[in-house]
Every structure is written in structure tokens, then in C-alpha cells.
Image 1 (cartoon, helix red, strand yellow):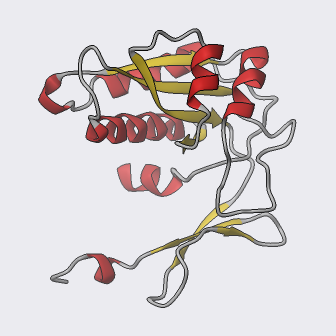
Image 2: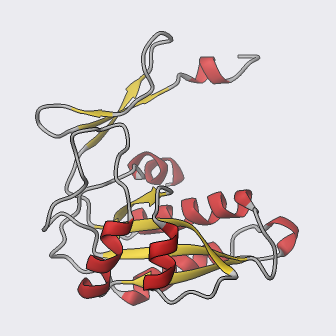
Length: 190
């Protein structure tokens, strides 16, 4: 059921690194995204996939993790992603189709959840460094990176009170809490 998939689809940042994710799974997720809506049907998005531990280790330091959590540098060894999908925009076809990027990323993450994986969209990327690492031509611009694996952390949705902070946080048990605005606060004619 879609509601269950959406509610299970959290931004997971800690994974069981010992459980691999196959290239076939990554390609299946992208294939669903490929078949999703695209503005003017331009289909500007391209992808680079990695599920190889050595390449994953090289990609990892180009990413920033959980900006609101100041005393955490990201997952430790054993908790890092088993795979990555680097979303690229082919600027020879079009540029800045952010709606396509969001649709594709959400489709990929929902497909991952359906298969027992989880992930996190990472926009804070050392793009120049990653482009060199992946030998990308200049017309392929890095949009974001989706980190994927089997989640080992609990993520809890909290109902945001009108005067509370929207920043996510972790408690002493490493449970990740994510405040969400209430429906009545976002529908202007509720």
C-alpha cells in the first residue's frame, strides 16, 4: 500500500553495510524513475550507480551527512551505504528541471523501501571532486546522490507544534526524530 511505503520512506543515514545491494536492484529503481513523469518529456536525467565497496569508499567522503546534527560526521564503518545512485542532469538536453529530479528521487526511494532497503537523498555534495572521481563529462551535472542500503536506525516522525523547531535530532539511543508540520498548518483552507 502506498501509504505504508511513504511512511517507511525516511531519510536513513545508517545502514548494515555487510548486506549488499545488487546492481540489478539499483537498475530496477532507476527503471521505475525512468518511467515516471518528466517535464515536457525531456528526460534530462542520467545516473551513475555504485555497489562496489572500493568505489563506495571513494564516493563517501564527497558527501555531507545530517547538517542539523553538528557532532556527527556521518555513518561509521559498518554503517555506511551499500550502494549509491548519483543523479545527473544532461545539460545538452535541458537544465534545472527540479520537478523531474524530485519525482525521480522519490520514485527511487519508494522502490528501495518496497524491496526492504532505505536511503537518503544527499544534496550537499563536493560536486567537482565527485565528477572527477567518476570521470564525468562536463555536460553531466551532479544533481544529488542517493545513498542506499538496509537501514539499521529507527526514524520517528514527531508532530510539530507551531512554536517548535523543524530541525531533526537524535536522542541518547540514536533514534532519529523528524518533526513534521500538521496537516491543518499546511492546508490554508483547512
